[in-house]
Amino acid sequence: MVRFPMNSHAVSVYESDGPSATVVSRMGAESGALAAMNASFFDRKKMPTEFVKDEGKVICTRPPLAGTRANGMFRIQDPDGQSVDIVTVSDSLSAVNAAEGWYEAIVSGPVLLEEGKLVDYTDMSSKTFFWRRHPRTLIGYTSDGWIYFIVVDGRFPGKAEGMSIFELQILCQSLGLYEAMNFDGGGSSTLWTKETGVVSHPSDNRIFDHKGERVVPNAIIVK
Image 1 (cartoon, rainbow, N blue to C red):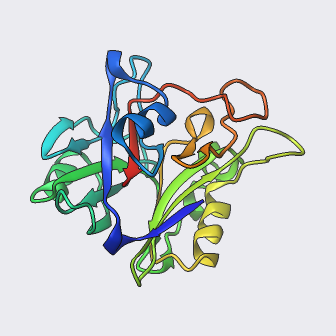
Image 2 (image 1 turned 60 degrees about the vertical axis):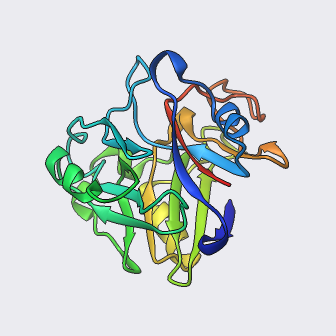
């Protein structure tokens, strides 16, 4: 976990998709970030499958994944990266509208906490994405202006079990987050810092070490 005050650091979307896709640690280092973590869902060609707006330019407007899995948008108001928000979206049109007037935005999900309350996904209890434990990545913030980058290790029985979406919600609530949203998980989940390097245990190499990063098309960074 990395946390920092919103009013003294700049948060931004870092997009490097397709042939330029790379690992989170490289995105962090190349951008001069203090910390970085993987962001949203993507396809086999390492292209985003959800709405992305980077530095005022819309990169992707594909419709969200089926159901309520990708129902949230993390958005950044201006280039200084010190004003952020999480909102619910339902389709590509609502995403375009929600990003209007915002400098950067990225869709992922599900939304975990909304105005301090758990979002109800009891009707999703039969969906394995929600109730099975996996590595997870999330972003959230408190009502007094602290932003949290969180990665949960998983897929290493006895060492790191991962979390279900429901467990992730309880974690967010216990940390006092006001709003929070899930990002891509599984083998993509990676947290990097300038000081330490990869601090999580990415599972893509199936070895419990810090070397199993997956190539991804985007990240969330902080400077």
